Image (cartoon, rainbow, N blue to C red; front, top):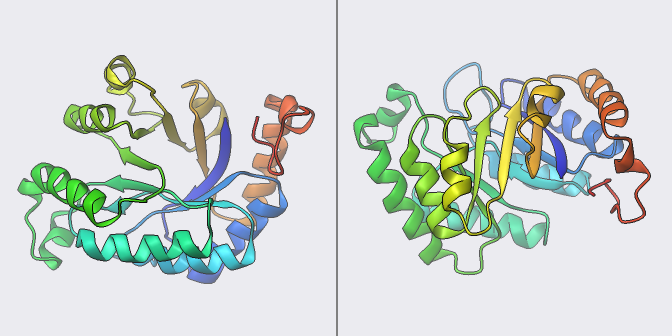
Length: 232
């Protein structure tokens, strides 16, 4: 299981980078940042933030999430393929629909069309980026997203308190891989994920979480098969 931290992006960019550096120093596996375009968020361009993080850490880099509906899929392919070249073997992407009607309008889209846009743009992204790294789908309310992930061999990300479609995905996927976003370590571990990301807001939160991980999963730091960041 990979364990990391995430931020929704409601911090100044310099503080987001500081979180990633603290996570790297604490031995976590993954750092993820969400994409938002309305205040108080500052993470409207997560690829740029993650490129800076790539230069400062050795962490695996991800999103939580990338808006597949309002972004042009060709542009997404260009941005994240560049990030993957800068940080080879350390980049993957979590795709999500978004949930704010006003933001959809800013990009000339309508939230009522978010589900068909998700499918259309996802298939275009795969065409534009044939050598892409692993893809995940964020699923909060639509079983169709769980079906899409299972059909195409992708991972599924859920919030720890919104897991109603996990069983559906696990039943259908040939090789299911589950990610969980959680506010607390214990509630995330309860879902037995392949990747667990816990929300943090400060380096002190990262340090506290690191201590909790050591207590809950002592084998991460003692297993002979562990890699640099303790993945077991």
